[in-house]
Amino acid sequence: MGTVVLSVDAELAWGFHDKSSPPMARIAAAREGWRALLDVFDEHELPATWAVVGHLFLSSCDGSHPDIPAPPGWFSAERDGDLADEVLFCAPELVGDIGRADTEHDLGIHTFSHVQFGALETTAALARTEIELAVDVARQAGFDPASFVFPRNDVGHRSELADSPILCYRGVRPTDGGGLGSRSGKVRAAAFGPTAPPLVEPSIDEFGLVDVPASLYLYGFQGVGCRMASLLREDPVVAAVRSGLDAAAERDGVLHLWLHPNNLVTERDHERLGQVCELVARYRDETDVAVETMRSVARRTLAARSDTAGDDPTPADPQSP
Image (cartoon, rainbow, N blue to C red; front, side):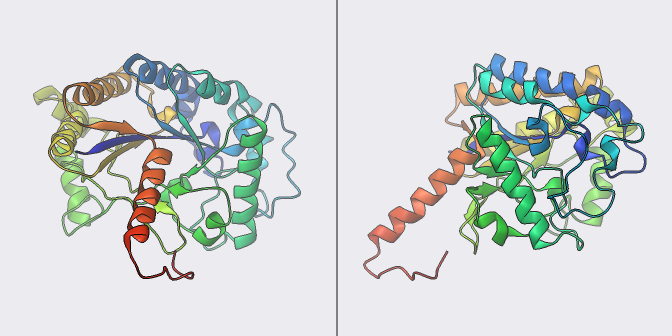
């Protein structure tokens, strides 16, 4: 039967520090949203993968990072402008809460300062530094990160990632001619809400990393369309999750749901989270659907390849991933 994975992009202001008009309401709600996520995960005993921006492990910072080969002005928001507040960029107590939670979560990384790895200006040296620093501060805090989420889901520099202790990453959602990644799919989703999310299949890429693709962003359908749809029927996102869980109860595959703590701004946002988590817990308890982290899925995927290689009488190619 199938598996559910929940992943969280934990970034506070780092997700928007390079934006000219950051969404202040979302940023202001991020700390409360972080704690609310931990509470609801504990309530339903749901382990999640928390992909944390490495800078959040720091207790304080003067905004100076001379060892990071970032573009000029990359760290200026720490000192200037509407976001110049240390609590938006440093949060060791929130990171510690992940380790202290009753539920055993998987702590992964989300780069050190939310650098977009697929951007043309992101060099291999910058990507390597961002990975190394994030892994280092996580280990200093007592964590052993093995999972990675690319900022803005912009996949890049996987060779640098493969040279680190990271085992897996969240890949992009598969699309087809009418999927959410297509123009027609986006128009349809804006009007009617998301369709049933796909069950994805983890795979080992050419660098030996496990790609655990996304199935559904839980807060991609918002605004007036969502409110109108919810008046007529169940929250469309909750309905989509239910369809994905039905599929996971019938066949193999991974239903990979993801969100940010800063998505939890309104009462409606919190209600959606609670309904989704209650559904996932119910299917786990009443069917054979499992709830795993990205780390555990990656280990299982790598172990399956090792078992297959062990059954093959032909020696493995040492150059193969």
